Length: 257
Image (cartoon, rainbow, N blue to C red; front, side, top):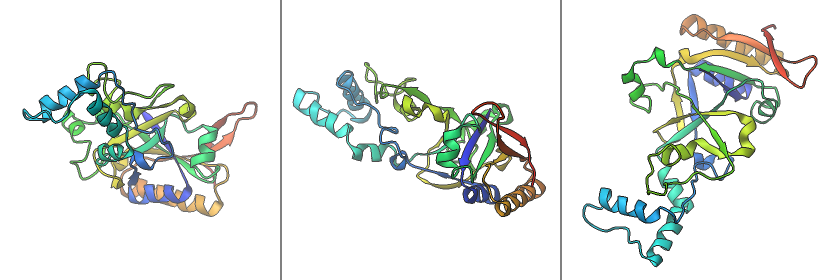
């Protein structure tokens, strides 16, 4: 699977030169709904009973009478609770395509930046590697997950109070409003706090230069790509982005100085 990161030319230089990516807490994203699941009354009592059974050690920590339920619901909906459950995870965002016009405008400095192509092939990694993807290796293997788009906020728990289904818990971090659908987003999520982390450099397979990248920046980035290919074993191919002749579309051509 190939996936793409829209970046400014300065960020492109850092990624290629250092082999690092910034991972950000959902708290700091530009969407206030990001990983902010709905906390509904339906299913809450079963959710609270599960917590009492699994975490309470015989003590009923979460009371479920009407007054206490409302208090707990208000707490679970708070920004403070969101900060707690996102504190030890962070996200790096990618896209399915390097040809999305608004993405070039919003995230690649209005075509003065680049798109870096990455690839993940599960056949390249053992099952043991996959288990370690969330941080026990000295570098991160980038495993992308598709973002789902919906008019409805995903729930923290389902009607049975469970948080481990395909539409609750962790999967809430992969659901966004349909208004963001144009991004065709994929996400790499790690169990580490916000920060800059090394990744498997060989996952970089291409770079697309925006139509407004300056000649000097293009030369500098091209040299960094050549250095990476020659000395670190990457196989990054260079492309230029151009406008299609007959449609409102972008396409690629072979790299040229």
